Image (cartoon, rainbow, N blue to C red):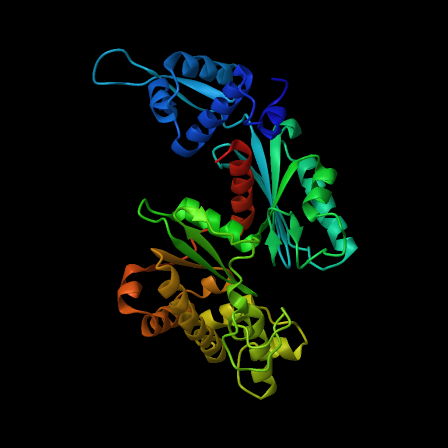
Amino acid sequence: MTSLTEFFNKPQDESLKGISQKNSIIKRNIIAYMAVNGECTLSELTKELHISVPTITKLVQELVDENIVTDLGKVETPGGRRPNVFGLASSAIYFTGVNVGRDNMTFLITDLQNNIITEKTDPTFELLDRPSCLERICTNIETFLAESDVDRSKILGLGVGMTGRVNPDTGRSYKYFTTSEQPLRELLEQRTGLRVLLENDTRARCYAEYTFGRSKEEHNVIYLHMGRGVAIGIVVDGKLYYGKSGFAGEFGHIPFFDNEIICSCGKKGCLETEVSGIAIEDKMCRMIDKGVNTILRERYDREKSIHIDDIIAAAKNDDNLSIELIEEAGEKVGKAVAFLINTFNPETVIVGGNLAAAGDYIMLPLKSATNKYSLNLVYKDTKFRLSKMSENANAWGVAMLIRNRIIGL
């Protein structure tokens, strides 16, 4: 083997039956098993992968020699011969995750065991559908990789999460940078020299939330993202649900209201037109224009923009108008969530995004409305919780997804 990059990024040809090809596939399976289950013995690998002891012993030793697997020494047993325990070498392989948000970019590098090695945020970034913005995305990624202390040759993949409709299979964004015939994934691969996965940001965060926050009983989860937009990520039987074209989760564009508000998708009455962060910001400005009192009036009069984070902060400072607008959004989205849990019957609904920071102001009306409009048996089966993850979750999730794709999980 000349390099780890060549080993993992080389396409597998299942039609070949040679010993080297078979051994390569077994090695991938060994790495995938350790990535999911952690440290293990040779006998455990033999049992789980249905491979003979001599073959497993030989291939694990090769992985040790290649610094992918570490021999952790003997493990204590009740009696008899003590077996050696093996685990993945965290420093052997790395993956990069980047989230391209509406008003920031987040970058991080993880190891084989999903530990974050380094991270960075660019709060000055603004996502615009312009060639200059695409150039800045590429430059930002190249700069982050160059400035990190991680050996570039050990970085095997780059995951990029973006807002809007994204198809991971075609590698295209269908909301931003759509004028080029070349998929965005291919352009990023050319610029970085890395294998790239382009993924929807909500789906990436959903995977991070599911991976790090789930209990052993959770296999069907809905992640509700309430930021400046509204979307969901869906986990069915422990796997992300994509739909036919990779667009599953466009929850915010359900025609839920009989209003004349034009949504960003071009249609009227979408859920997002009433309950998104942008919708709440617009309502706040209209109410101030009508003379309704709020502690945000001074900011508005100084012609400063009012962000959903400002409204949440005002609510926590007992601003009645801010509390009312957030609670109204919670009640409306709760009715829509009732439709979701009646359809999917998940174990858990996780609420994340900017509005999750509102805590009980959003969760109490959301759960009350969901209870009111859903089937009682289904509602009782469903747990609700706020996101436990930080702002880097989108980048973390997409780093895990490119890792999984490369090592064969």
